[in-house]
Image 1 (cartoon, helix red, strand yellow):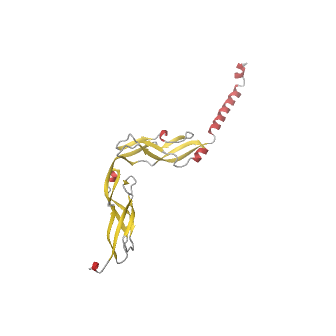
Image 2: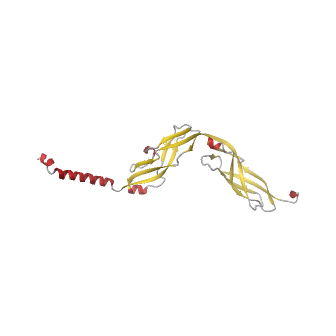
Length: 219
């Protein structure tokens, strides 16, 4: 009797099994989707006195999961975390794996592009450079600039050796003195185009002395 159960209507039973498997896959996969996003690359544990000069800002990943979860995934909530504790000076190649990406277990990472990134590591350098006030314009007619002094007159900059050694001075933002007729004290931002270089101060005080031109001055 048991034998008859397994042998009778075998094709019908086989078809039912296949349909059950198909239905199971449909239930599991229904509502799943994919989303491709660019995520920031963050570096940690860089050894002291070393600097990252050239590195990728982002990598692109493709994530699979339930559509409702993917839809609520906020930009910036996912990032790649790379440990640099073992790097040396020179070019380094690092492979980004799924372990480097912090992501809820309800989502699966299907692709990382690129998977291998290159970094240039350099020694760190600090040095003192002069501050140069960037003065634009002219005083009111009949007045002249007597002196321009920055306080402090110099600052310390720090960063990758190849970049810091090229910098001999740091300028302030443009200070407009058009039509002034009295002494001026201005808190000016310091301008450094390269974001890899840090400065000991972000602002300096610039003192501009003005005097009225007299007949004696014109002699």
